[in-house]
Image 1: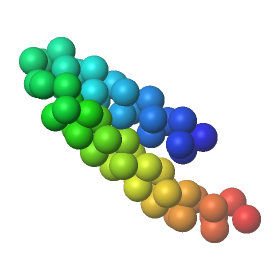
Image 2 (image 1 turned 180 degrees about the vertical axis):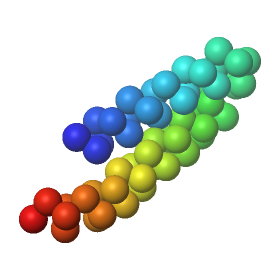
Image 3 (image 1 turned 120 degrees about the horizontal axis):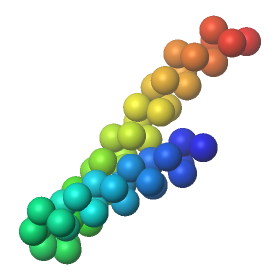
Length: 54
């Protein structure tokens, strides 16, 4: 679930950067930075939520 959500966020980040006129190579870099940020956030949230649920 986290992987799909971060991939979707990365795709959205790439699309927004590319629409703003950023070259494709830099847009890919920005999209991957968004994806890794969302993945880190998701892992941190899971680390907090899972002990509360179990």
